[in-house]
Amino acid sequence: MAGKIKGILVFILAMFLLFGCDPTTGEGSANGEGQGTQTPDDGGDTQTPTNPQPQNPSAVSEYNVVTDLNTVTVTWTNPKDADLDYVSLRYAKTEKPTQIIYNYKNYDGPGAECSYTYTGLLNSVSYTFTFIAFDKDGNHSEPVTFEAVPRDWVAPGKVTNVTVVPPLHTFDGYYETTFSWTNPFDEDLEYVVIEIFTEKYEYTRPGGEYLHAKPAEKMTYGLSAHYAENVYINFYTVDIYGNKSEPLKCGPYIWKWDGQ
Image (cartoon, rainbow, N blue to C red; front, side):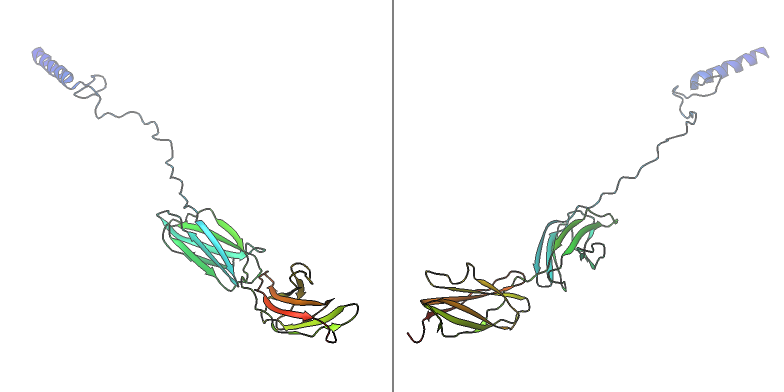
C-alpha cells in the first residue's frame, strides 16, 4: 500500500516538473512564462480617445474686382482642397453688412478659375462682398472680404448745335460775344467745360471753365475780350463719376467789330 502511494506522489511531482506549474498556485506554463494567466485589472486605458481636429479648407485667392454701371464683376481662384464642396459669394450694402442681399454658391472644382457678375446694383453705393469656401463636411475657410462701388466708366457724349454770336464792339477795344450749345442726353452729366484760347493767350482759366449742366439743356456762355484772330473753343462734358469726353473743337474765329 505504501508503495502505491509513493508511486502516485512521484508521478504528480513529475507532472509539476514537466509543465512548470507552481505547486502552490497551480499557475504557469510549459515554458515557464505564465502563458494564459491574467494580471489584476488596473482599470484599463484611462485616456479618452480624441478625434482629430477638422481641417478647414483654404480661402480663395487671386481675386479681382471690376465695377461698371449697375454691376460688379469678380474673378477668383478656388482653393485646391480635394474635398472642396462650394464657394459662397454673399454681399450686402457696406452700411448694413449683416443684412445679406444675396448668397451665390459656386460649385466649380478645386483650383478652378471662376468669375461672377452681380447685376442690378445701385450706382455710387458701396457694397461689401464676402467669399467663404466650404468642404463636404461643412467646414469653412477664413472669409475674404472686400468693398466695391458700381459706377460708369463711359464718358458722356459731346455737346451739339454750337453757335457763336458775332462779336459786338463795346469800349476801349473790347468785344463781347456769346456761345450757345445743346448738352448731350446722358443722365449722369454734371459739367460742360469750355476752353477759349489763341495760340498765345487763354481767355478762360487753365483747364477751362466748369459750368454745371443738365442733360439736353440749352446753355450759353458770354465773354468780353480784346480784338483777336484765330480764336479756338474746346467743349468737354464731364459726368458725376469724373469721366471726361473728348473735346469738341470749334474755330478759328476772328473777334472784330463789324464796323472796323
